[in-house]
Structures are given as C-alpha cells and as structure tokens.
Image (cartoon, rainbow, N blue to C red):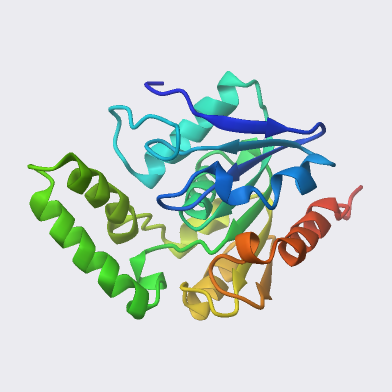
Length: 231
C-alpha cells in the first residue's frame, strides 16, 4: 500500500474501526473513543488524504478507501472488526462490507448514502457548484485541486446499487438524524436492502454522534452488545 494511516488506538476487546466523514479526521469521534474503549479495542483512522494520513498516489475514491481499510486491517492483523462509519465513512464501511463480508463483525452506518441523489438538494446544489469551480482552478492551484477531490467524493461517489447491499452479511444498524442532510426515504432504502438490519432515527441533524454523543453511544453500544439468536 502506498500510504500509512494515522490512527488513534485505545481499549481492549473485540476490534472496532471508526471511519470519519468527508474533509474530517478521526478527531470527529472524540465523543466516542473513550466510551467505546471501555468494551472494545478502538481504532479511529484518518482516511487517505484526510487529517494526518497522506494523499498517496492511488485514486481518491470511496472504493479505494475501502481497499485502504483492508490494507490497514491486514497490517494490524485484524481478522474481523466491527465498523462504525459516519457519512463518507459510512459509505466506505458499506462498500467494504459488500466486498469483504467475512471481515466485518457488526456494521454501523451513520448518515451514509448510496449515491449523490440521496442528499437533500438544498445541501447538494452548493456542493456541485463548489466542485465545478474548484475543478476549473485545479490545474493552477494545489488547494483548488484538493478541494475538487474532496467535493468530488460527494458528487461522483459512492454509486452503490440497492441490490448490492444484499451481499452484506453483518448485522447492521442504519442510523441517522431526524433532520439529516440525507433524505429519510434514502436512509430507509438502505435499511430495507440490507438483510439483517435495524433502522434508528435520533433527534438531531447529520452530526448526531458529535453533537449528541451520550444518546448516540447508548444506541450503538446497545446494538453491539445484543446477543445473536444462536448464542
């Protein structure tokens, strides 16, 4: 792999990997790391080109980030892990769970989307305009190029077909805010197509994990601690 991820590590127990959203870093989960580390071995990683992880030379795309995650898990000898992904991190986790179902314990998708159409137009239109402008200047400006790549993730990715979700074998929690930037119907569509999934809406916006950590943590930790019927 052409990069080495920056990551934060804490706790002991079954591994869980936190995947942040677009333009963010693992610091987004500052309200989760200590709480989850009481029961799990937490790895909160910076995605390629985010935070303190270098950009590298590979494509800047959700599917590449999913393969980066596979490389991270292999490098750290993590055979199987729970995944908690927020926004683009949720998209990474979703693609990873489709491609590598045997490597996922339980899956938490927070504010994920299958395609750009899942984002409310009031949010998506400024993103698309910003992407076009940044692309125009990307040849002359490194900052514009970086901005175009970041916005491009939300304009061109992840484009997962609903039927692809049927390959996910992990017990899944699909969670979003009641005032999320992702359309409620789109969040419901994701949950409907994942075979063993549960859908939860918490009062709040897209950033419920960050802004309402107590309620978010209680919901997710409760989901993770549930016994499987066969056990």
